[in-house]
Amino acid sequence: MDTSLLTELQQARQDKRQVVLAVNLKTGAERLLYPFETRETSDLLEAARAALNNDKPAEIETAEGSVFLNIFNPKLRLFIVGAVHIAQCLVPIAAGADYDVTVIDPRRSFGSDFRFPDVTLDNRWPDEALAELNPDRRTAIVTLTHDAKLDDPALRHALKSDAFYIGALGSNRTHTKRHDRLIEAGFTEADFSRIHGPIGLDIGAKSPAEIAISIMAEITAVLRQKAVK
Amino acid sequence: MTEAPTALPDDDILEQALNWRKEGRDVALATVIKTWGSAPRPVGSQLAIDETGNMIGSVSGGCVEGAVIQEALEILKSGEIKTLEFGVSDDQAWEVGLACGGSINVFVEKLN
Image (cartoon, rainbow over all chains, first blue to last red; front, side, top):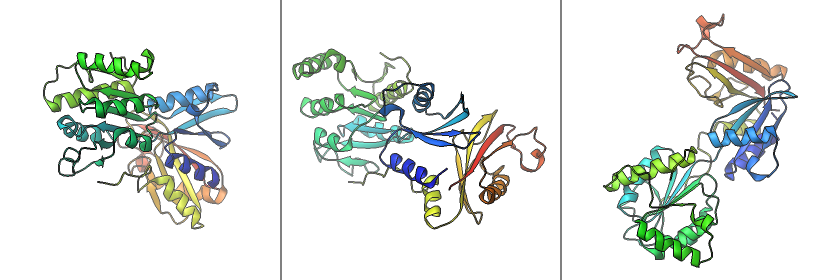
């Protein structure tokens, strides 16, 4: 491999781009693919997309010989809006599943180091924080505040992003009201349908820890492309 | 408020390989490209080796690293690419085989 290609690969990883290193095992020829940054299709690009989606390298046969596709996915990220009790339970579960977790809450008494000692805290308003954190295809966003003043700006921003999962805490009734506000704000039904609400897989969760488990289970199912509600 | 982590881990293998290159060292890169049965490290795992035998990363959790390093040092001289095969049915198994009973293919190349 050329050092210049390796330099480009490392830069792409720093920039959190989903990149595939395609190596011809017979000739040693190598190139980088950014399959989600193009609309083109080819067997190679489709295989690269599948490999990135499955989080698993792959090998495919081409006219020029076997090509190994090594994948470089950015680390998964989870942005939790609302430094509430459920968030306290969700942080360690998500960290254990290898997500970089950021808790966003402008209310400093909630989003304090005392309550969240081991996680990145962001005390800006959710829309401001998300604008800079730049959610991408490897990002999940959950809103947990129950407060439209905080949840809605986050959801509006999330819906404009490529986040693979968006979830909002609240009852069916809350979710219906949320629906009306977002439609009023100009979002389509298709946009709104991206929001998982009421949040979490239905496992009969009651306590904050159980709800955190149901949320993490749903995020995992969506990431791994299992059908959920 | 804790600082957000950077995109790459401190012990990133490719970053170390790149740093070695910047220091003017010859570097080889080994990548697990196929596994059968229970292999210790998944496909895509990498090991970087410099000209003096320094290494970072792993392709097998220690079982075949020694053999990979030897091949890598040869490849640094020849500049060729090579796919190495390790497994229990291999002649070398008694020396450098995988205790877990799996087999792996490792692609080795030089950084030019």
